[in-house]
Length: 408
Image (cartoon, rainbow, N blue to C red):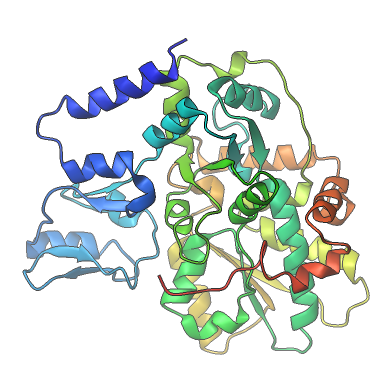
């Protein structure tokens, strides 16, 4: 097996072999924590034809011309989705990668490094790569362990169910979620900010996992692994800084396995079943609504105002749903938005087709020993370790699982 020092040197050498490389591009590869999740390559194109072709593909009009006529991104409106990276006709945008710095921290071993795997992970690296085998693969690479973020989706499900029970008292009241999708939350914050009072101040499961690990193991390094590019931007938001050190996409992780000649399908089983069905199904569109509804029924089965959900997936559908709310066409009290088609399983850096990914998520959810987080002893025990004597105290939490929205 190639050592990590050799792998790191080879990757850097590969980047430097092209004598025409952009130093800014290399800087983004080596220092992603200090750079935007998307960056330009060379000069922007500025022809009217190129502008029309690119801007027309983006639903939120974030591409603008600067004073020199060059095409650029309006950061005040950008929701960190994949559109301008994938649709740039001149290939002038690229997403940053965290591969090299992650390899470096694994090589240095100055503290425990944890892989936080997104709920959409099941089957992404091959159909025969079980969660137990994947956990062993991460350990073989030098990670201290693999944590399923679905466990923290369980905790956020409890919190959002409690928020709903507290805030939705009358017909016409409504709540906007889901906290797990940074595209959806950023869209509301930047473009439809008048609706922010309807957004519970919950962090995403990714941030909850990172903060919890940092609380329990203060010197740990947290590496989130998932299908989403926008998570790279979320990890750098001012009120969330420090929870997640690096973000790898599934495709980046696949590259690391490939370049290190490590095959997860050949690894031994290391089974640790901690999450409920509710948390595991966050990865599919509609999964958050279903999880919160079932949990709410367990928490308060006799409440008068019943749970009525509506969901949208894909930026266009999310935008349409928000416009309906703004026009007063409110036929639900729980609105779930997911920026990618199909939910996280349809993320831009997922390896599988979204339908296959959804099937895997549902299968894994059905294998869970617990249906909802209130029945999950691991959730209850973890909350006790963190100082929560009752589930209801999640409503009074101002540190771990709650965020204070600030402008970046």
